[in-house]
Length: 288
Length: 201
Image (cartoon, rainbow over all chains, first blue to last red; front, side, top):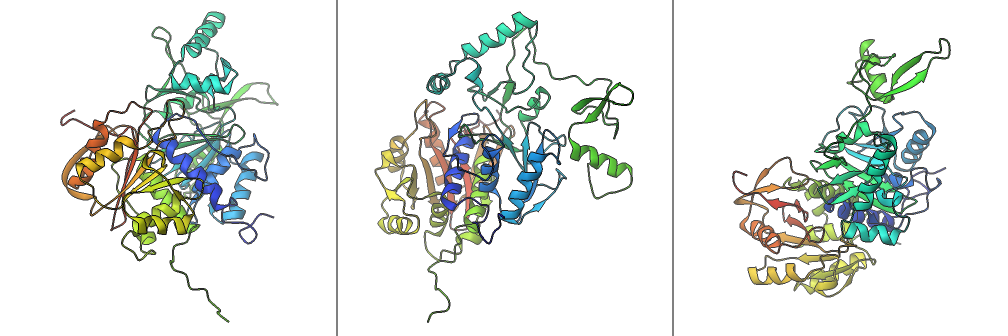
């Protein structure tokens, strides 16, 4: 049992929180740059969102309202366990309403409803280094960032183009932040990349296993990499809608209906979808 | 037997520290947006209360600080946080408890750690206590955290420090991050990428 009686508020000791907080402040000052930090042991395996959890635990206060989502879902195992842990060791209010939340921790999605300036989105990152696909050594990628030497990355995209006639990266599509750092936006779909640019909200990225924290402050220039003659493309859901709430223009999951064998679509952001359905049925607790 | 421990300060390192950090985070993420930490600052009934409150939020024995010409404040910060003192060019956090003249300011800002190209985060954060952040000087800010351009009215000292920092033209990602505070507990964050916009730009 992890609770406030047996553990410090927000589980981590104050020294750990201070180090993570200092790293967060530096990350915000240098958008897109990966600040190394001493990732702590948690009662959850590394690679299961420990970077995001450490950020959330370091920033959260008693008045915060927390929402945790995993691949758009409020109810997946990872999201539910993280919510339980943070709730038990802080006593903060938990919500599935992204408008009510002050902190949203997410894995692989940015919520559909545009976030506000008074909210913070914490993203869990498995592989923070965008150059890892072209260079396996950390010491070398660090130097590449230092020199802004990104030709390997561009070449990798070009090779992809020659092999498949299009850039085949589906998620964690690399971005350029403030014309300086190439950054891995975490495994969000391409569809969400545009939400990083000139956003109202602060994005904090935590990689617990790789011991890195980085950030995108509000109103920061974040461009997905593209060639002059090959524009950046996102997933296309034209002509498709959610079978549950009827939403269009949102990121949809493709599901095969077991009864009919047909392809059907549902909103990937379950909180958004539930909010729409509640409103359609006259429940006004949700504002989505 | 003493039933209740008398504390020198009412500052709570867990909860007050968290609140100050969030305001600081918001100030650094939104340059030009003035935040307030007066409720937490009040818990140090001292002349340098805002610096003590920020110090207790950020410092510990892992970091090194430099306090300009104020041994009393340096000793107080050390007692509260165990943060060690060091020379100006090696410090992670610089505390300026009084408004400095142009020459001294330039000396400080030129000689603090600016980081390296590989490790730009190993740079100093300068925390400045001024008589007032608000003032009659118009400052147009731009850069990350600012939508297009933001106009703030600041004291001449604040404008002087930001202008001087930017005039040093340290190549990004190297640089110095500034945090202004005043006796009213106001906070203004000016990270290294924040620029002063030209009028009409």
